[in-house]
Image (cartoon, rainbow, N blue to C red; front, side):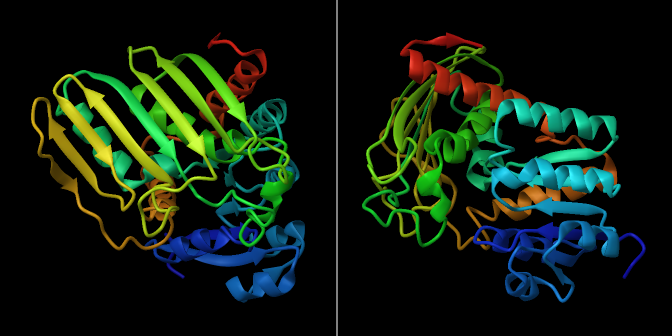
Length: 339
């Protein structure tokens, strides 16, 4: 192994972890050296060095990075274990911890230990959002006034909803926003900056699940943009793979519009014109959702190697969790709430 190779150990070998494992293997000078999972057989499918106990794995392999790819109930204990073992860089999947209060505690503990704690928030790294951000920054659609994201995963109907892929979705007390909508709370901040106020109207359509699975959130941004999250996990959108973009997006400015289609295509239409043009063509993307997991992981590696700006450090991500909490408060109270 080369001296400049970063070593990674993963905790978790469930459904979504496959995208993490595969992406790490495609990053230059990074080596996935171990995996830990409650089911040893699953960990063995990932790495030759397989474990069921996190403490034992960390003591044996001493990785540069621990990548936690497990449900929220495990996060606090796993991060504390890594801090005790002296792991310098810890990446943790979202939803991050069980609550805002727990997340604040963990962030404070990581800061006191001088560890780099990062939330694995990959949606802002999807290529269509990066292309849209660059186009808006260049002024290609003028002053942006509105953005609308229609989440349509099409996987929420009937008694078998979510059981094949992520069965714990059925028992989550908070589902649509805590598990999925939080991605777009983060992405809207990436695209438009700080949120000024939120108004939310959430509902549960499928009686077999515990949490909400549909709803609207209206975000007033400090720069004057209004962004609407319109989510419904029962309905789908026009795409061979509804989980590629998770829905369709429209950005509207004074000089035109940008739209993200279900195949990952980005199109631009100038104000006053009917025809539009493709500025990001549909592609056969590897990995998950436009290869956004690999893009996020490469971003972390670049930060560790060059000191480049880190976008989703856990301390900064607390603001996203605060906004998520405000969304649920707004839905409960039936009114707009200021940040």
